[in-house]
Image 1 (cartoon, rainbow, N blue to C red):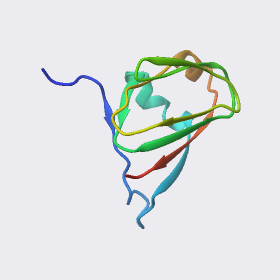
Image 2 (image 1 turned 90 degrees about the vertical axis):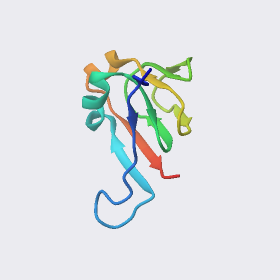
Image 3 (image 1 turned 60 degrees about the vertical axis):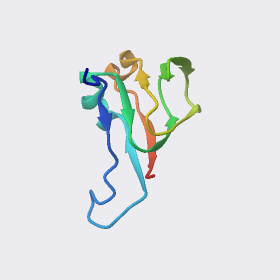
Image 4 (image 1 turned 135 degrees about the vertical axis):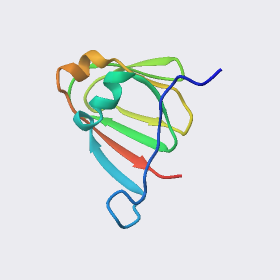
Amino acid sequence: MKNSIPRYTFYKNKYGSELLIDVVELKYVKRFLAESAVHTLTYYDITFVTEGEGSFSIDNRTYQAVPGDVFFSKPGEVRNWDTSILQDGKNCIRIALAR
């Protein structure tokens, strides 16, 4: 059976030179999460919530997310955003650390 959970990869050379950290506003990630809020990453991730409220799950453990919260995840963990906060266009900062 094929794994149906989308897996997102960190591309170290997406801007040309190799980078190990990338900062992305959540509004740019919305299009991926609109297809499936449940996903995994191939890299370490630090998510800093700057606006909005909702829930965020890592490996089926759900946390209430409010401004000022920081979430850490490692490669392979199953993540799930409450996409209702994304529909409101609220932002957060994601810092992706390559493995």
